[in-house]
Image 1: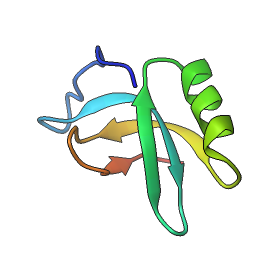
Image 2: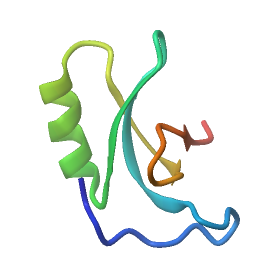
Image 3: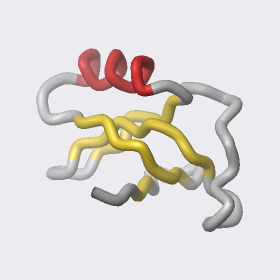
Image 4: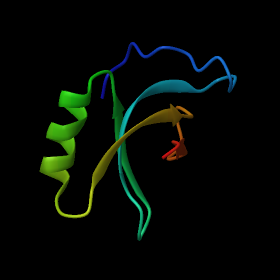
Length: 67
């Protein structure tokens, strides 16, 4: 996972980046600076994992994005 992520100006304590998630059952793999890094992690994670740009609360598996 990338360490230097920009702060989310709308959610204090959260960061912005490319997240790798699976919706059902919920699984958060990580958040990355680049879409390419995230796509690689999603491929390694296996079937059902998707890449979205969104906001993550470090230290948790909380990740939100808009469609």
